[in-house]
Structures are given as C-alpha cells and as structure tokens.
Length: 118
Length: 522
Image (cartoon, rainbow over all chains, first blue to last red; front, top):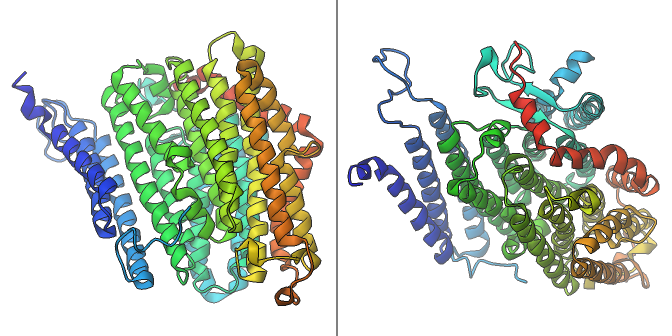
C-alpha cells in the first residue's frame, strides 16, 4: 500500500487543485478570483492528463536519442498541450470581459456588478 | 462529385474555418465582397450537408479518417486501436447538421442588416463562422477529445459574440457568465475524457463503446459528462446563466446559441446511446433524464410567464421546450433493451428528436422577430411596446407562425412532435404526459400575452414612423418560416425520411461501433 503513494502523488495533487478551485468558484465573489479558480481547475485537469501519460517503466516519447525499452503513448501529452492552448484563450477572453465589466459598473464584486436578476 | 461526397465531412468543418480567417482580409478591401464570402461559404456548406445527407440515407454511416490513404481505413495495417482522428457521420449527426446549416445560413443573412450599424463587423463574421465550425465539429466527430475541442471553439466564439455589443453593460455580463459556465463545463468534460482514456487507452467513441466495462470509474465519467453537458444545455437546476446570456446577445446569435445547446444535447444522446448503450443501467439514467426534463419544462414556463423583457421571456421558453426533448428521449432511454422499446420507446425518442427539429426552426424565428422589434424600437421591454402590428406586418405574420408552432396548435409542426411525445409518454407513465400538456397550455397563454402587448392595440405616438425591417432580415426569418410550413404540411414525410433514421441510428449501437471497428481493410 505504502509504495503506491509516490506513484499516486500527482493524482492527489490534481484532486487537491480541483477541490480548491471548486471551493473558489462557489464561494468567492471577486471576479478576478473566479478567473483564478478556473485557471486552477484547468491546471488540475491538465496535471491529471499528464500523470495519466506516465506508465511505470516507460520512456518519454521523444524519438531522438531514445533508450532501449518501451515508450509511453504520446496522446495525453498532445491532449494537454491542446487543452493548455484552449485555456489560454478562455482566460484571456474572460480577463478582457472583466476589464469591460469594471469600466461599466466600477466594481469587481459579482453581487454589485450584476444587472440582471430573475 | 463522388470525391466531393467522400470528403464532405471534413469540407463542411474546414470551409467555415478557412472562410473565418479570410473575412478580415477581404473585409479590408470591400464590405460587399466580405458579406458575399460569408453567405456563399455558408450556402455551399448547406449544399454539402444536403448531398451528404442523401449519401447517408442510401449508403449508411459515413466514416472519414483524417490523414489515412483511404477515408474508410480506420484501423491501418490490422491495428487493434484506431489511431487517427476519425469523423463518423450517421443519420443522427447529419440530422443535427441539416438544422445547423439552415439556422446558421438564416442567422448570417439576418445579421447583414441587423449588425449593419455596429463597428468591427469583420471580426463579427470571423467569430460567427468559427462558431459554425465548432457546431459542425461537435456533430460530426467520432472522438471524445475532439468533441471537447469543438465544444470549446463554439463556446469561446459564442461568448465573444454575446458580448459583441460591448457598449451595453448587460451584454458583457451575459458574455462573461457564458464563458465562465462553458469553461467549467468544458474542463469537467475533459476530466471525464481523461478517466476513460486511463482505462481503455483510446478516445474513439466506437472503440470505447466496444471495450466498455461499466466499472465504477466509467460511472463517474458518465456522471461528469452528463453534468458538464447539462450545464451547457441549461437544464433546470443549472439554468440560471441561460436567460442572462441569451437575452443580451444579438438576436441572430441567440438563434445560433439555441442550436449549440441542441448540439450539447446531441452529445448527451451520443454518450448515453452510442458510448454507454449496451452496458448502461438504462432505466436509472432514463428516469433521471425524465425527471430533470419535467422540472426543466415546468420551471422554465412558470418563470417565463411574468417576464417583461421580450428576449428574456423567449429564453425561458427555450429552456422549457428543451424539457420536451429530454422527456421524449429519456422515456426511450428508460426502456432501452426492453420489449417496450418497440411498442412506444422508439416513438418517444422519435418525438423528442422531431421536437429538436421543430424547436430549432421556430425558436430562432421567434428570437429573430424579437430582434426585429429591438432593431426598430430600440427596447426589449414589452410594456413599452404596442401597436407595432400596424407598421411591421411581415414581422407580425412571422411571429404568429412561430407562436402557433411553439404552442402546438394543430396544423403546425409543433403539434406533430408534441403529439408524438404525449402519445408515447402516456403509455410509459400518464402523469408525465399530463404535465407536458399543462406546460403547453401555459406556453400558449404567455405567448398570446406577449403578442398582445407588442403588436396589437392603437399605434403609439413614439412608434408612428417605425418601418418594416430591411429585406435581409425578412429573408433570414423567411427561410425558417418556410421550413416550419414545409414540416407542418408534410410531417409524415419528414418523420419518415429524416427523424426515424436518426432515431434508429441512436438505438443501433452495433452499427456505430462497426463503423469504426470494421474498417480494417487496407
């Protein structure tokens, strides 16, 4: 049991990141903090994907100067890169919108800058 | 022509993508050329969708493997796992594709006039075409990760389009809500994809369906998929963002957003039927969908009754109408694998899917008429409008067509699909059908109220000089109205040739799996 803990460490870290980010998303009212929460959620999911890509005894899938033995499938790394790129776009768009919201309402509090209810 | 049909799945996704990045370049030279490019590329895509639909109705599922020597070669050299990105277009995918092609073309034509006064139109059309790409990608892909990528493309461009009129504070707020919800939903979905990849080392839906064990991790993944996609479709406990975002978007964009939420609904069906079909605990998942569907239709319509903002009012109705589709397909899912499937389950699924088609025609039409009112009066408040029927006769007629259709008044298409749902759901559980009928009555009542306050009554002095909306807007709405009238006159034809094949494609999981796993011939 104990020897699995180092192997599972990345998954525990990913779970922690996802848990903290959900706490932020639900309880924080500052829009910038909300965006940071989404950034953390993205990091958690990306860490999970990268951790999946490692199989015990496998080599990194880099074709130049590869040691003998099996290589891991490079799909999770490709997924993570794509996901990082998408998240950059999402975070940039969210930050521009927060700038506009601040210009319109003068507040970053999600309760005070709300216009629509019901 | 044969080559065009063979490569049409990727062309349908690639043409709007290329056109999206050509529009700013051409827009710098000439506005007219840019508008022509947008319309021509969307019209060509619609043409491709129609020839692909014809091909699928004759030859069955259409597989397209990107980068393979032949498009059907899914398992090159006798490999056990499909390694390339594969598009798998069956009757259900192309059914959604037909809807998306029609509505995006109508919305683009509508925006020629509706957005004419805005700045930055080059970028508007870029985003619009990107959203079209994202939607088609979601419908045609046979791969879970690509589903996520296209979902994000549609979400990012959709959020930017909602907030496009940045001079309005509420538009930015709506856009921000949409992108936050989409980002969270997308990441939850990606987490679920990771869970499945960890066990089966593949992302292909057909391959995963073949290997599916329905272990605890698979159930967690299913829960994550359902959570993320139902957030995106605005099902009731998670619907708060939906009216806020849909109200403030330009009307043509709201029309397209309705279809992207149908695309997410399509993804739910794809996951429940094609991915988990054989192993799923069908009655539990089916009942969950049915109950949430009932809540959705009832809460949506009760919230709609007291709205005074015309777009917000219609957004709540959009939520409510989604409930019918969840109800129909949920009942079908609950009896999947039982003998009851043949007696009424298949009809329930057909009713739900037919209602997607009808809703995808009348709800964009209604949103566009609301946009036409906003275009001429500058307000969305129903209490400030009145007597507009005197000057906006065509808009009035189009609004009446949409209203009668959404309320399910007999000659129109809304009746045909709702009747199919009532009839089949009644055999499953009578209470469900009674609630569905009650919701339909409240829908009619509230639309009559909105009709009365916007169009009827004496001409108000401030709207004396209001003119009918420009021709492109009327043409955009006319396309959808024509589709409604066609479906109303020939419901049998539509059900037989478009809806029933889509239902069978959903139920027949083996054919979907075989499309991928049977493709090892060199």
